[in-house]
Length: 322
Image 1 (cartoon, rainbow, N blue to C red):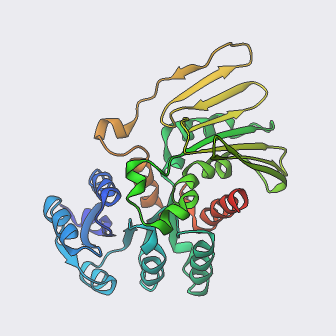
Image 2: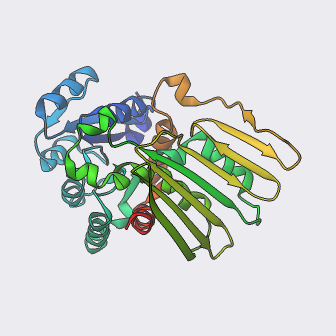
């Protein structure tokens, strides 16, 4: 490796050793400029296992040790949402750039606290949040198509959550009580991606359908864009997002697949895309997200979710569910 290559190499560390942490490792490994130099988590056994599997030199027990031993310029935080607030606040005391898994806090109050604390420490511009669906090739395709289109948009989101799912039932009660933040923010963030301006009017209806909670939320934005968000709790239904204007309708169902219907067409036609994640066999959106994180580390323009934008999504979630 030449002198220039060494100079350009970036040391990166991870906090967390669960499924998402491993998915991030897989994505990071695809970038020659990034070198994973350390890992830590609450469960030291799990971090040792990942370190051995992916040849990570330093397994640390504290954030200070992780920072001092690795000389990392960047940090990825992928911990349970109950740990996020504490880990982020402590991590902000060191000089690295941070990419945190979403949501940034257990609920709206924790998100508010993290934002306020980051500003007090003058570190709010050094942290971004991994809403990886912003980096789906499907999302990027739609944005590139409608970027310069001034037509008003109708954004329709259908959200489905099942608290009785076997995977969900194992979570702590306080996570399940805040499940709209832990999981619905994935879908609600699309509103802040595609709806322009500020909300100037909103209405919502919450009712029980067969003893299950159903929510219908309507918002009008200063741009003229309209949002319809429907949440089905403990009922079957697909996650889907549809963005429509006068000439085209773009549908994500599933979110990794894009179909388009023109004004004179009777059906949606799927758009075939070559996804880098399929080629590398990593979680959808993470390759593009790490690529954007590299730009963020280098101080270049990027399309990651800022802490301010993240809080905007948490605020909208609070509006819908409070």
